[in-house]
Length: 428
Image (cartoon, rainbow, N blue to C red; front, side, top):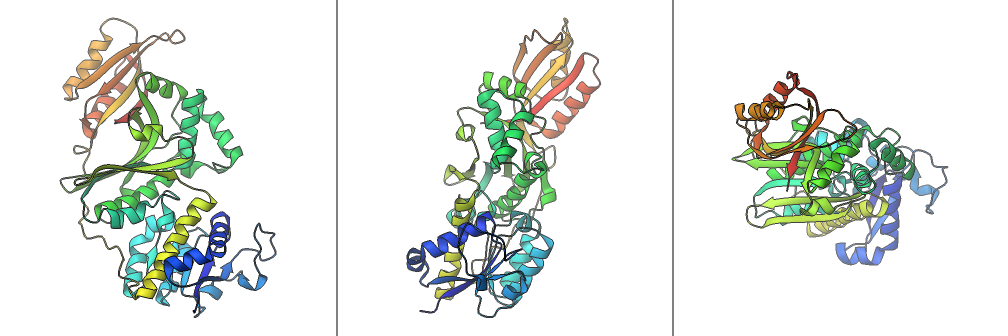
């Protein structure tokens, strides 16, 4: 039986995992796909570099066009990362009729619609399960598992680095800077952690999930982003006392055909399943009109979990080829994108204020909320022996973002309010 030939762009952590699975599970993969699968060419930066797996030198190349222009290669797996050059290579491969499997969230978040359109033009598959949440099959679930349902909300922990940091801060009462250093030493965080801790990585993933879940062309610029670098151990301690855990959540919501997508540190009720997701694990919570609430949980990164998703996509491409249906699974957004205004975006809010400790101040504060029609669920004054100011913790009922912005702006000009220490969305 003729083998299905694969070109692999990149032999880093994930690429190495892909080779291990394809070479080690050949009988299983053939039973699933209907054909033997052979990795025939691999793009590397340096052919002479020592590697953790044994690969014959004739399979290695430092020139990507040796793979793109090779007529014998049927599918290209892209796990090298990058955007501009990678996009050029993938578009060129599609024009030559080659199918694509990619783990590149940055590429798909920024250029997914263009790539998918090119694939449709040439009857090619583009699979990108591994671009979001590592080993969790969330993209296939959204496309196929929820095809008969209407999704109203996607809420998830989609960045393992930030979840590890927040989990350690919660469990050990440690400061953000200390846990970040530990995460870098363990390899969970990059030397420049900006993409993770400022929420940009999660925003790219939510762009992909929002597009798939709501069938609209969501752009990265549509996502409101706030990272975790300002989260303090005091915030986490106060949240725990009130029954909440702080998590960096991606939240995509649809109501009356209007969409909002954000990434932000969020107070999650401890009774909610997402509050119990710790360490580098990811979880995605989906609300469907028919199915109700479902959650998908698992490892969000790593060599073998991510490689497993990549190879699962590869098997799907080979199976489609044997069935003669390549290019028919392509996802094309068909809904007009209508973004919510600040008046339409509503949530509960946690607010920590430092105010003058004297009579009448609390009344002034509650009056501001009343003026902007924001109702309060609870108001607590917490004693702090190290702070001569009063610490006021407020949790609102659902309030729209525009009204909350007005409240916070008014607090900034009030002499009795010395600091707005923290503001978090509340979920669960």
